[in-house]
Length: 191
Image: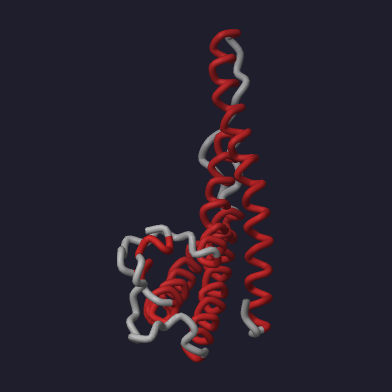
């Protein structure tokens, strides 16, 4: 945990959002199951039990889970990592990589996405863009979630950045006598 009030607030908000997203996931699965059952049952009884509304609602829920879940995944360090060395590094070495990555890639990318997506989202709201499919849902609200998601992601990125800077400024509690940066036993952290 950090002593930074900004990070505490952002982390608490992101954790609550993560719990909310877990319920959205359950809703999406239930709607998907209903769509599949209704489609096959409808063929059997020769009636239309499904509609584009349910299909688009499932798509909207998936979009919400994916977009809003990015900040939660960052907070929980649940993003996919390809680098096999990172897991073996000491806490300060990881913090240094995270600070550089946040400052040079994550935060600028989020700001770039906000900047380039704003005109399209604004136009969607101006015309109240809707689905081209019959009984479909309006598209402009889900497009606005792109802005919300990247604002949340940049806030969580700043929180992570501040926490990693605090690690870099803190004591070297996990350095061994040799000052080596790798764990002596790679299996100690589940590798």
